[in-house]
Image 1 (cartoon, rainbow, N blue to C red):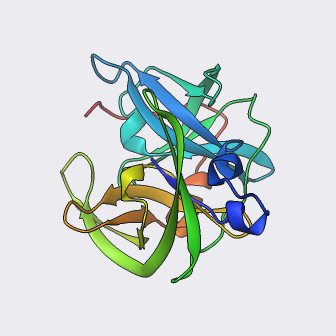
Image 2 (cartoon, rainbow, N blue to C red):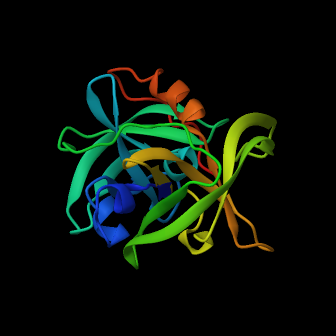
Image 3 (tube, rainbow, N blue to C red):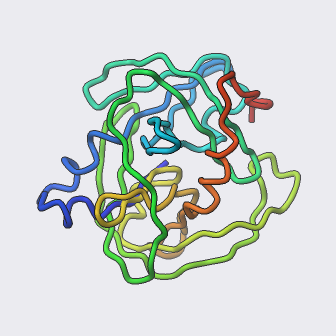
Length: 212
């Protein structure tokens, strides 16, 4: 997953990697397949606590979930919301103390996408939002079509799918869910969809559905 942010510009940080390093974490999920799944999460502020937003497909069917900091530190965590239609999951870990609020994206805004992988580590890419969208896509179980608010961006296609996108002043703008194979653009789900899943968070562990 990739996140987009303007933190590198608005906070006076020249290196976008520095701007996103405090709030982007790797997500490792075990039990959903023979090999552990690995994705990217972003720490957001919601309801007075720090929660990690990632893609639901990363944690689908998992028994155990942990967060991986850029330093390699593994942090125990649990999934507290799971929405396969929006492809969004929310993770809670008591050790997370830094987070960013979310705000709505605007067309033409310069942003940063950040992604963490198990082999490369943390990466950041400068991007520009090229359009706000209302899309109809298949859920990741390929069982139904769902409508959601999203946006298109360019310049960060190499960040891959399921990464966070940040905007001014370092706010989280969305979670990347796809990239085009024909054009150098990516697509991210908007905060409106993410807020709906955050509002469903409870104190108990969420059902993560079946594995993919």
